[in-house]
Amino acid sequence: MPQPTILSDIGKVLIDFDFSIAARRLAERCDHPAETVLTLFDDIKGPYEVGDMDDAEFVRQGMALTGFRGSPDEFVAIWCEIFAQNEPMHATLSALAGKLPMHLLSNTNELHKSYFLREFAIFQHFQDGVYSHTARCAKPGDEIFLKTAAQLDLDPARTFYIDDLEANIATAARLGFRTFHYSFVKHSQLQAELDEWLAAQGIG
Image (cartoon, rainbow, N blue to C red):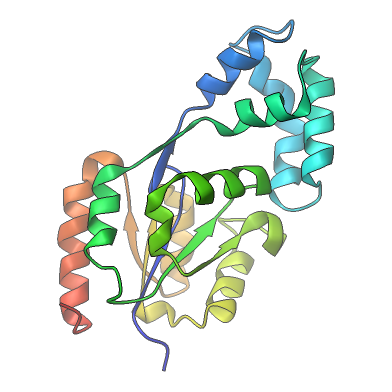
């Protein structure tokens, strides 16, 4: 029988992100203002996040669309250096290390995934993950949750799923996951509900 498991979204749960940082830095290297430069990515961000575009093509198109004056490596650095670790969550998960499996489920892209897995200690707590760009489907659709349960051998009824977006929580709850709709200001509530759930699973 699959064991109790924590399944977590990434952005606005494990790490914060601020695309305005990238917008300001891009604006310094192209002829578009920070207020609108990110709208130039609207047509390529979605395909990139579901695996219809690889890293090199995303960078090429992103540089072309913005008229970026710099190298591909500089563009990638600007695209990626927008994250900060959620320290209360890091503390919560550190206390659970080795007590139960923890996995990731995220709509993301390869450049961001490679960056945050490398840069932030919070990810050392997770054994595996499912990502939209490799699953070739995205939340809040059912398919990525079903793929995740199959790939990671999860029993939704014994899986505590954390996400910041209500639509994703709604899908997970309908599919039988125990869910928590997270925000940074609700961390103490998460801790209380997680502690209660862990006790019910016999995990102290």
